[in-house]
Image 1 (cartoon, rainbow, N blue to C red):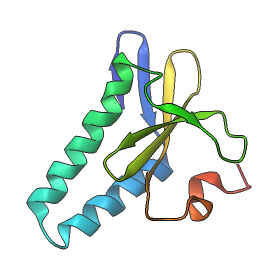
Image 2: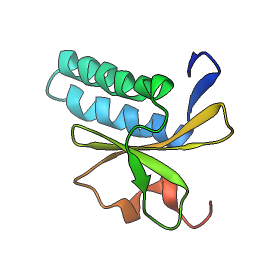
Image 3: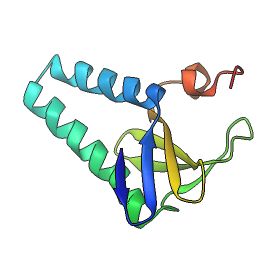
Length: 107
């Protein structure tokens, strides 16, 4: 969780799992690049502290969220409150969004 000024970022459990899976997959080929990719993704997320409306509206299942494109990933986030941004998922573009557990009908 990162915080700057009055804005705080919370990474939800689904997004934490996404990040771990990304790192684990890359680590199969290179631990060094896995660590680097994780840091780059975190840096992209932390940009939201300064630019909370970065990206564009996320148009899926009428979810009130935004998407930040970073490399091959969609970082889907929304305001929980005026000062808290939630990272819902870090979704690889090659995967179907319909299978993403962050958007099950149980939400």
